Length: 110
Length: 117
Image (cartoon, rainbow over all chains, first blue to last red; front, side):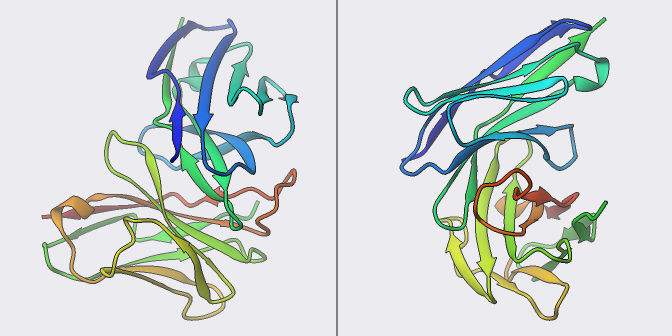
């Protein structure tokens, strides 16, 4: 089966750092993706991890531990526009279908 | 920057009617996907398509659904007889290879909001 868990909601202050955790149990695993989704819009790609460790892209970093089935997305220097849902997704299978978690709704306040 | 486009942005239909949702993937991409998101719920995989055939489909993708690439640019999702529970946002996505690489990820279109009355 497929199970991806992430917190439902988080709040943070503008300029701060926030970490969004994701745990997964899937029958196959190719890689883990993080997408951002503003209300009513499409998911937009943020980062992916295939190997264990940290991947950094500007204000966003993502970490993966395959042995623990665990990932996190780290957002630094938070801005108001970062208020959105953050979707953890695992790819599996030969054609890399994305299996999404329910998403974490992040509210950034002044 | 190339992007996936979808039409229409919003489709309202009566229960039992057929609808066709259209997508134009990024031009050099070879792998195409449909996902749906019921309001307030998670994004769910429907089907993947490669080399003019379905490569994988989910339990949601039953006989009422079909996909087609009628020409070199369009990728369509057809629902033959819509039900109330088909109301959702439908996203098309494309990628250039299924292998994981720094840029070989799935890029999503803006979605079609389907409302079944």
